[in-house]
Length: 350
Image 1 (tube, helix red, strand yellow):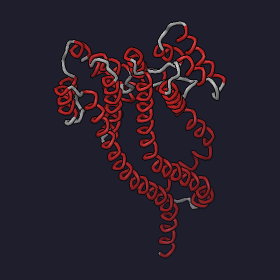
Image 2 (cartoon, rainbow, N blue to C red):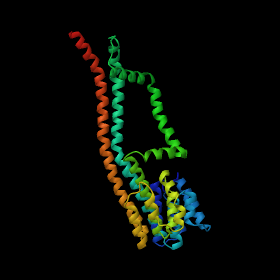
Image 3 (cartoon, rainbow, N blue to C red):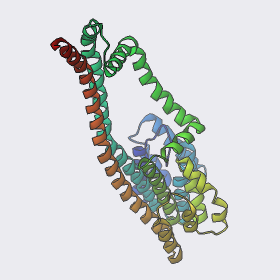
Image 4 (cartoon, one colour):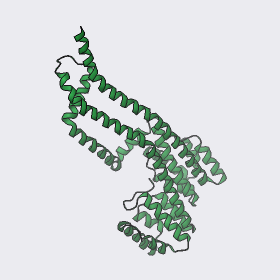
């Protein structure tokens, strides 16, 4: 992730950088711009901005103050620091805003693509529970009163229905508690996060999507830093340190020393598995022509399009699978009821 702060959400940071860029570009000093920004925001945010302003007024840099009090990432901090030293603060603040917006847009695409399958899954779960708790309890006493050997499917469905009846409150409690424990462990425990991510990238389609998403953010961050005037080695280091996908970050971290000694980033990415074949030649052309930053941003844009297409393929694949699964569940419940009745009617006909 590019940032992590309680006072400022991603949208708040986007608005903050946009306002600061506008005020500084119009001729206001940084101190005056920060003072104006303090108006019209929440009390907690105002306190944080005030600390940033006091840090700048005491002779500190804006990048360090923002990193200290707003906990922005090394990528954004590096961009702003280069803008301060190069006299392009307004331009760099605008670039930081665009970087956050692109990340936000990519996240929203992933969320919107998965919204429909999730909704179908929730309705399928509700329908299944409704059938198990609403219909089966009325049918089960009649089936048990027959004192005959019931089909295996009927016995399985009856056992599940009884389980929901006796342990429903505990199951509901676990359904609510387990995801919370998992999310907490994922955020707080590095080993859990590493294991989950290592598992995800091995899943067909899903793994490609997760890896491409992280690689796109890396190219976007690194390219923006290079465009701001930072050297390729420094940009590479900052971008790697802000990556959230541990397996890819670990692979890229192994090449920090070679890159710092002048090895081209294009050669580094060429050795890493799962990196799309077009990335290395594209960066190589940028390195030879002196447009590495633009080449990286172009590569991130191409990856974004591939991610969008992958999301559509995954959505198109998940929808029929979930619909078929829902049909199988409903059909199994219906068959579990009809099969004993059919067997009894056949016996009676004899």
